[in-house]
Length: 187
Ligand SMILES: *[C@@H]1O[C@H](CO)[C@@H](O)[C@H](O)[C@H]1NC(C)=O
Ligand SMILES: *[C@@H]1O[C@H](CO)[C@@H](O)[C@H](O)[C@H]1NC(C)=O
Ligand SMILES: *[C@@H]1O[C@H](CO)[C@@H](O)[C@H](O)[C@H]1NC(C)=O
Ligand SMILES: *[C@@H]1O[C@H](CO)[C@@H](O)[C@H](O)[C@H]1NC(C)=O
Image (tube, rainbow, N blue to C red; front, side, top):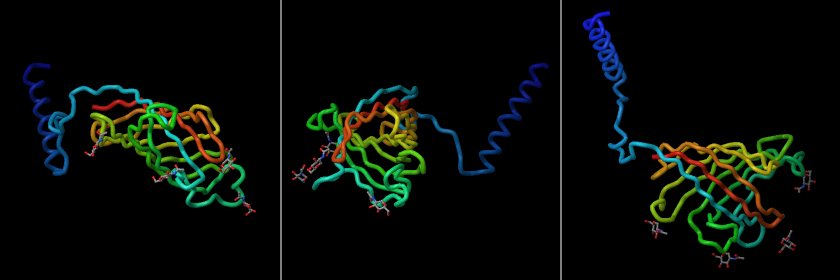
């Protein structure tokens, strides 16, 4: 193939792309810089703890819709609730607060205590203040370490992707301490 035919193919490609953009009228490509994003993504590891209270005057995690009675001693199937807890730097509830975890959960297995959870990690510390990480996935509470996907974020976490590893460090009928390791790629 000669120079001329290469040029022809290139011109066809360009006019095709241009025609597609013109045809739809609602999509165009962007430089990351125009959105104030770094040109290269970075990978960060965050470690947070939170402390749920299920009883007492300051409940942080509550089942709003009770499970179907048939499942109330096993998988809690049908139960749905909300949670809002301080995120701390350490496993001690008195350690420094750096944000909150707010979200919803629903017990979605008939056979084991699994929840689908949708939670936002809303950070308040340093340059992360005002940014959030969204986690949505299946949390198999019977497992020691559970893995959930990071599905996005806001602020410094625009276009975030990644995953979470979470472990229950302490649990009784009144309270829990949960550890979250978040591995997140962001701009
Ligand atoms: C519950 O929260 C209220 C208001 O923030 C606070 O005054 C109270 O000490 C808390 N009680 C407990 C048991 O943590
Ligand atoms: C579970 O459901 C059964 C049947 O409706 C009921 O008798 C029992 O009190 C319930 N237990 C709890 C913990 O809600
Ligand atoms: C985070 O930002 C809010 C709103 O801009 C501000 O009121 C607050 O003091 C900031 N928190 C920290 C820890 O810097
Ligand atoms: C939960 O709290 C109640 C009321 O304070 C208390 O009687 C009970 O012993 C606590 N249960 C556990 C496992 O700590």
